[in-house]
Image (cartoon, rainbow, N blue to C red; front, side):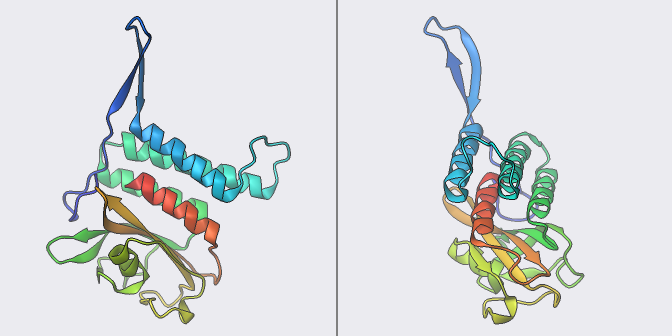
Length: 212
């Protein structure tokens, strides 16, 4: 689970389901985390048209495979890394790598201040490090408040955008949920206008689900 506040952050733990033969022989177990991962892969396949049989490795197919690999690694980080901070850092590294982002962050709601605190970050400007964002402010704050993902292809034309780095040109964010409520947001930035598309946002949402 991702708890509120920066000192009590933890990742969700899932029960293992035993697998046995009819005679009672133990064959091992299958975790709910793995079930969630399989559902995420199916969702990605439906939205991104991953081919069932790969005959020609086009650039699109290579991109899809990188996305699937990233989801697998994020699932592994979330379920096996005992240190929550290290797990979140590993997840954010995967996010940065897949989207070629200039910066990214995982922000969690601080119950004491009712603001979003940056739990882990990569590539943020000095102004952004340590900054607490009020709920509802900026794209990240809006996503955390409404529990909905958001894609901005040009921040100069988006009224929700809150500037912390004047080099950023596009941004997208997805909510992080715990127990049916939004507790933070996963945010990605780029220095290029139109760097992200709708399929990127769908993948980011799947990554946020795995991180949660």
